[in-house]
Length: 332
Image (cartoon, rainbow, N blue to C red):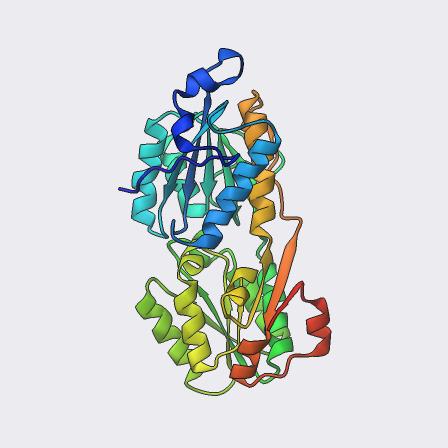
């Protein structure tokens, strides 16, 4: 069982947060927000995403110890744990729940059809059955898509730009955590491979052992490269993925700039912090009485690209000046 965290938005002492009802404005009882994170509690990047969400709430007038209380759970990429924690969170009857990732949202949907849910970092909410449509979600769920399937084509183009010798591209994902068990991305992946004259390799993974086997296989012969999808398992296990790719000298384009900051070659994907910040606005609107069925699902509006020059040198790649000029971050 994951322990509960009570996050203080304004940096005040946790001991001062009780009794919550007494601290609420004008004597009103504090509202309650549940947060179920797919990531690991010990991950600083994951914790920063929660901080962005709570700061966004603070800017909208919601402060822990005053008028809102947060119940946070961390699943560390474990789908079975997500289901346990979803039920636990629903049992405390929060007013709103923030759901991070596709499997977390699925677990919460099974646990409640009445508590308003705002999802973040979900790729295909219609295909996953969370919403009826993007403009009119219906039901008790709405939220923020992290990327469309066509983004995989952009990652393949970047892979070819940064490593022109690549002839084979493996797409890695965990079917347990990726949208549509990975099928959401595959048509766009195969189409982009054809247009770039790359041999497509579909490489599902479920464990650190699988990560090593797949990357060893890709790196066994020259001309192999990797594109990593934006699913929660890969984010939680990014240290192992980066280490294996760098050790094998396999060019890899990852689904988030965080991978490049952590030593990977190149990361391109949506700005997760921007998504969590925007989710705070939906949390505010739901707490004030709006219905999730009437709040349209939002697309990502900010993308980041980060390139790690040290990783490129270690692999033996010369980075094109045009690509460096386009990067939001160049990490040396």
